[in-house]
Amino acid sequence: MAQYDVFANPSRSAADGIPYVVVIQSDLLDALATRLTMPLSELDATAKVPTALCPVILVNGRRLHALAHFAAPLPARLLVRPVANVAEQSSALVSAIDAVLSGI
Picture 1 (cartoon, rainbow, N blue to C red):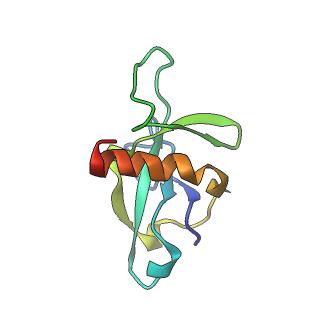
Picture 2: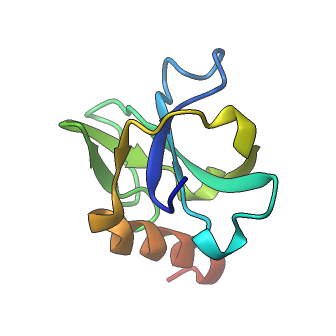
């Protein structure tokens, strides 16, 4: 599994509003049994979200908001088959994590 691979949300109870998660953990930590992930959410078009914290990420033509403030580890064994890789959008994801860590 590669950094910025996108997977179907393994949580059935949350998958309606958060259909995907993206692995943001470095490939250098592949020996760990978990992967740090960021949820990708479908938000109401009228919802106001801070774009630095929740950037829009395109996954197979769908516009989703990355929820950096909900980044969490998941067992790697639950992330079976990637549906996309969003490495070309990595700067938005890294900036969102920076917003969580430093408020910038």
